Image (tube, rainbow over all chains, first blue to last red; front, top):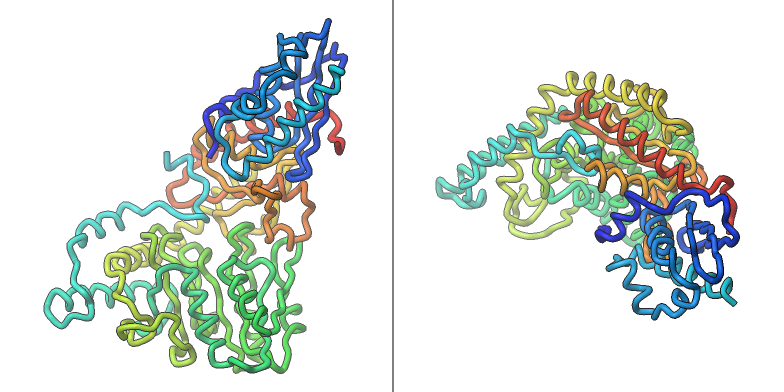
Length: 118
Length: 393
């Protein structure tokens, strides 16, 4: 039902919680499932130093937030934005049809980060 | 493993005694329609099973029971078998908003063909009121189909009172009861209730899957759903599921023998589960009723404020190996919400956070303790992830 990547991230998220010294925030609301993801970022000199999420959502939504946070921490914004689409989608592993809406959440996170970088 | 299973309303494990009997009869392969001795042995086994099934529901003659492939087929048989006589007529049927899809889909099938259908509401406790049934009656009402106990909330409907109400208005109205979740868990006696037809299923009471049954007070009132070789006295074509019938029969026999013992055990376990929940988990709400006389003793539907039960069930399953059921799930285009909890008037957030815990004869207090511990930890984990203020984005 859930692939191993999704299971690993929702059952033991490494990047959930508050980030007191955050200087950016991404907010995602998914019209399909009503899930919400708030991702707080600490960006210094175009580099993501830390990221923490809070969320209300299904298991795959929670995992998506954690996977994205894990991916961007320590990277330059330019490097994150340059991530090809197929690599972005591969981050979540194989999804079942009911979980596909989480790809929208993932893409939206990338899109909002691109806007931060501009 | 079985101690971590809390989805008995979905299906039950085969009980060991049933497994033993099935093994014993695994080579009983004769066709009950054959006249030779192998056929006669198979036929006698099916007849014996029918008597065992009859005994559990207090049915008199064994030819009032028809074996089907499932509870769903039994419901289809009852409704379509009765409505067949009213083709081209302007008739009205009554059911409820909280029925299983087996009933709702059949009603919608007829509604699309011009039959008038009333879907009765339930109150906050999940109970359909007899008064609303009385008010829904029309001169052209020919059929009423209402479930005995709801699969999601466990709410037990006042079937006997409903039947008395209906029959006092019009004794010719056919009353079918979907008792799939009730038979084997609470006393269900067809003659005492006064039902015209009653459906139930083997795998909900520790028997094998692939077999259900329809009780008919007067078999001549129905047309067959499956035509064929004259099996089941002509009421259902198709070679009988002999092994399934044997397993179903022994499961019914055992359920009958220990009905009250199991009822008492489940009632105590449910009280214990509620007590432990109240001391271990904050902010939860019971969906349906906790009144033990109005709900199945092995079913508890609860919502944990602020979290999505789909995520909760996933953590329980993946980390703790615990199996439960949820009231909403993501689909490709939307979140599917439980139609039952919607009928009770609950909010979308409450339905999205609803979890059904259903347990049975193999569940112990230690299993409940383990469930509570896992549940408490999982709810805490998910609430820690919640935004401080849940704002809409």
